[in-house]
Image 1 (cartoon, rainbow, N blue to C red):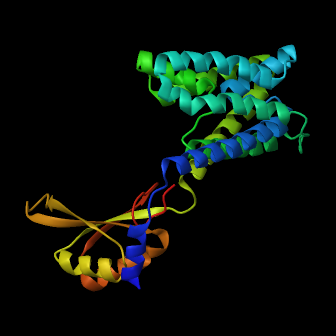
Image 2 (cartoon, helix red, strand yellow):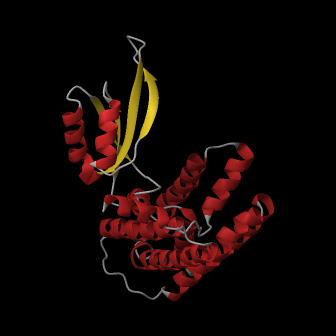
Image 3 (tube, rainbow, N blue to C red):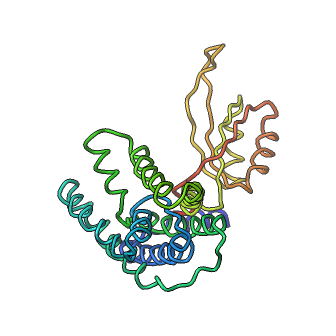
Length: 293
């Protein structure tokens, strides 16, 4: 049964280009819809401008009463054209649809009524919705445009780290919200931004966390056999040397699921009670025996 299971994993084929493109578009559509309804139901009514072009559109709406979707189009289009010119056509294919689609969905859902007038709840649930939507978009290897494009341009031509560039642009928008709307709104915007970033990470990596184990033992072959046949997991043998003795040692690297950790420790203990085992979290694992994103 285990042999058949391994053979079935080997027979799985990756998706073709057309299937990948269809999945990418589907994730972009669903993600953009989640962003749009979360934006209109939680962030806009309470003036929570948590960064990006969407945050700027909220500020413009508060000052000049211009619908946020129009501001987003007005900013996304020139940023997209600038990115197309400076970053190339490959960039354009990944951002053209998202740059147009998200403001359109924001416009279509602009009359959805907010379920709460509590700013803290709105910042939390708005952050969750926007983060979930962005996570789906990123899983589809797409983009919704916005200030992320400006951050990429800044990174390309000044060498500023991309994460720092994004943080700087978002920080400027949140600071502007504190001046234009109220300092309290800027604090809620920070909460929303934090929740959004954590939700994106959650959608990207999921609940299932894997573990990577490094095993140092005088009986590497015995441990290899129980891992391969009893645990039904592959492993990698690494060459190592003792720091004190300088002796050559074999280090076994094994990646397992959360539920397999106890079994792995029991098998190693049985094969070699004196084995040295290091187990740590790993955020993402791709390949045979592990689910692809």
